[in-house]
Length: 222
Image (tube, rainbow, N blue to C red; front, side):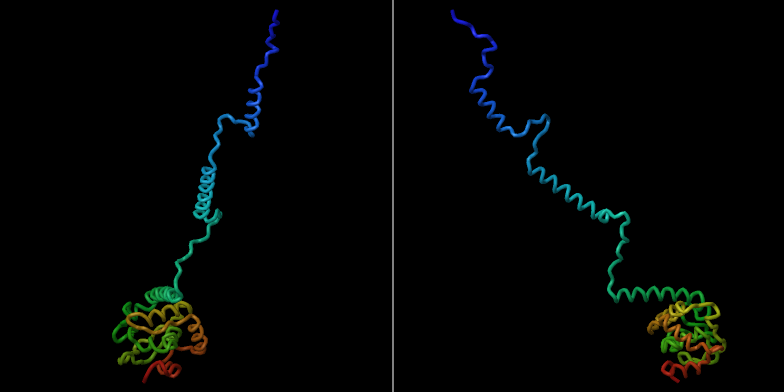
């Protein structure tokens, strides 16, 4: 009588099945994960590049992450343009000084008042030696002078020191009148004004025209 095998004696897998299972396990180096997809390397590379370029752009737009961004750079100007810009500011300032302190006598157009105050437009006393106009402003002028072929001098001028005009303002206003209304004389600097002030410190009265002509013989022709 044939003896029946018990269920426990019957193997669950055949030898061939066991070989296949072990082969599959050897190929599977990492345990499988649930719900995770392995992205291709090309996508990982592209994503990394995107992050890099975004970081660069963010750094540029935020001044490299500085808490206190530097002040905006001024437009780059040539040395000549910088000089012209500085001179324009000086002339603009001088025009204001002139309007406040000089225009009532010499008029905004620089033509003066007939028989009272001489013109500044085209005046050789304005456009010749810088010492002439500067000393007139510092100390004033009295007596007769000839301006553009006409004799003036019935009303003494006021010394600008009396109205507290400082050296910078004098430099600005003299530069303005030397370049306004068709005049084209050189700029007068604050340093020049200080020098003229020092040289005329002993002058206690208003200047006379002949005195200034002796001090600056190249300024006014007889």
